Amino acid sequence: MPILVFIESAEGAVKKSSAEAVSYASAMAAQMGEKEIIAIALGNEVPEESLANLGKHGATKVLQVSDERLNQGVIQACAAVLHQAMEKTGSDILVLAKSSLGDPVAARVAIKQQAALASNIVALPNLDEGFVVKRSIYTGKAFTYVKLNANKKILAVKKNAVDLKEDGNPVTVETFEAVLSDADFNVKITKVEKAEGEVLLPEADIVVSGGRGMKGPENWGMLEDLAKVLGAATGCSKPVSDMGWRPHHEHVGQTGIKVSPTLYIAVGISGAIQHLAGVNSSKYIVVINQDPEAPFFKAADYGVVGNAFDIVPKLTEAIKASKN
Amino acid sequence: MKILVCITHVPDTTSKISFTDNNTKFNSNGVQYIIGPYDDYALARAVELKEQSGGSVTLLNVGGSETEPTLRKGLAIGADEAIRVNAEPTDAFFVAKQIAAVVKEGSYDLVLMGRESIDYNGGQVHGMVGELLNMPSVSPVMQLDLEGDTAKVAREIEGGKEYLELKLPLIAGCQEPIAEWKIPNMRGIMTARQKPLKVQEAVSDETMTSTLRYELPPPKSGVTLFQPDQIKELVDALKNEAKIL
Ligand SMILES: Cc1cc2nc3c(=O)[nH]c(=O)nc-3n(C[C@H](O)[C@H](O)[C@H](O)COP(=O)(O)OP(=O)(O)OC[C@H]3O[C@@H](n4cnc5c(N)ncnc54)[C@H](O)[C@@H]3O)c2cc1C
Image (cartoon, rainbow over all chains, first blue to last red; front, side, top):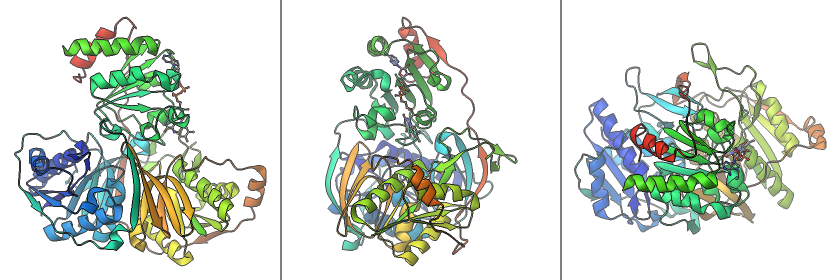
């Protein structure tokens, strides 16, 4: 039976996390001997060519629901469409990226489909003892192996759970007609405030994050410069967003965004357990802190003990030099 | 205005996590339990809304009798009454079923809970309850104000915020800065003892998943330190060992 993948977009482009979800579905299909991976995109903002390119990541077909009302992520409407798509395509597994839209949508589809749902998945399923997934729990401090007992399954996949597949070929994009009622849009989106042209924090491969040691918002320029040469997103500790130095959507940790990038660079952050909870699934951690006793060094792969104001500009220059 | 606040009973955020019985059970030895931090924000906002426009705040937890001190703490913070559904919260679907039954029975106008629990990190329950009751659900909510039967909500999205208007009743998964955490005062703690705490049995025992075992991440192998004048060496390590740049 086909595997369905929910595609999210940002600024008219397919999100990288969704491309990863397609790669995940493709690797899982190979395990199960399935052939069909159907990606479904909602709204009409993403150009057909980009959708066709989902084939590179492993999709065998792409469906697009070109209803303009779906350009904004209305949770109930998205859930209604995915439910219909699972029915019409005969899919018994839905894969999506864990995200601020993916999570609540998955929950509603799970009820409609009477499906078993697991989120925060960090690896491909194990099919030896039923259908078992590994998920991250206790905010990154542990993992659990969960068996999904229903015939239908929904998997919300965490960033970096599988490598991005890029060796497939573009595929055809077909229109999917969904039946939507006004009741599916009973939420009015009055305004959207969104940083444009920025690397999104949960999507980023590299994150440059600053803490109270940065002394004030006026000093963020050097972190932004470093982020720029790395193509990174910027993050911060909780007190930094509490004091309004940085917007809340950059707050990383137990009560903020949980990131799992390839590289996390922490500057002037002490490494409180609640901050570490949000970053401990990063592949590599670099810590810059003037206090050699800062707890963050215990969780780091690389560290520099010293003044951030001196080290960060040097690091930016050294990276620039290494790229030439 | 009848508000229901669903809270989890979870290990304190500084807890060291470990498992027993061949990694099949959480080791609660020496662990302090708290109201889930996200649920705590939801409760704080519920109490503020009650102070502004009247009504009542009911707390709900699905759990064994060991969660009662956590419910009492919520009563001390300002909830009026509490319900405990006497069952192990085995999975998100099971918990959502219990909550949906309580919401239906009590005809609540607003159901608040945290965006996710900090033990299971599912982030699923609010959406499931919404779907079970055919009500709108929104999460993660950073701002929530009421104007008559309309809720004005700010929801966090990647890279920003989305402002929404929707009609009550509704379910919201909350996070900061919806309100500031409230610390119970002496009077709150005293009156909490007299407030009603009702225990009821589960309405169904259906689950969709089962937990087989737990695992801890492998320990970090230790940090490699560079001097402030060795930044080039750091960059080389990132390039050659970590293969990032
Ligand atoms: C329930 C709960 C949830 C929480 N959730 C979160 C969360 O999600 N995210 C989070 O981050 N925190 C969270 N916290 C707060 C957390 O406990 C810490 O207070 C917070 O992470 C500290 O932030 P910080 O490291 O920026 O500041 P500090 O602890 O003040 O550390 C500043 C660091 O900067 C260093 N420094 C100072 N000057 C320089 C310089 N010139 N150069 C280099 N280094 C310098 C210092 O040595 C110090 O290590 C939570 C707390 C609780 C109780």
